[in-house]
Image 1: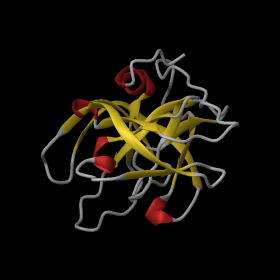
Image 2: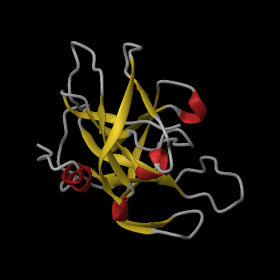
Image 3: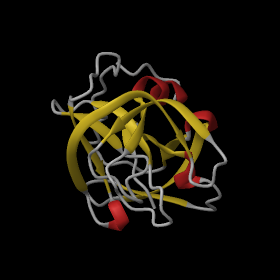
Image 4: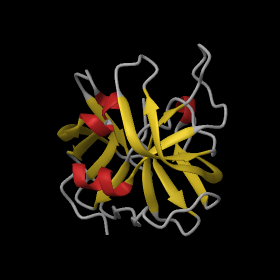
Length: 175
């Protein structure tokens, strides 16, 4: 289970590759409750990103507004949106804690660089969801949490792929 964000109003959704990897069937649920099967139409493994195409979409589907992460600064307010532990939708606020960070997956199989570090609460289920500015613009896709213990729970360090990298995985200009 994970989260995604609509980046094209024709049902193109951005999420994490680890959310859909190995799935024999993908179902997305839109904010209005509409359920649809979806297929993977693109991947960018080096950034843990997957691009989905929903088969059925709501009539009034609107794509998220995106904004460059280039002018983000440590201390900027951000909100992590998602379905932590399957509870949601949920939003938690925090700040940008660092830029150009590197994250290694819990299994140690992959290292991702140039990430936005944030301290808004993010837990399993937030993966693939948007990191949003106070103005409501997507600047990143939540991809991981640093959890040095064996429990995979929030301790205040989350990471997001900048939207420039995420949108390019879908082959669309982010702004």
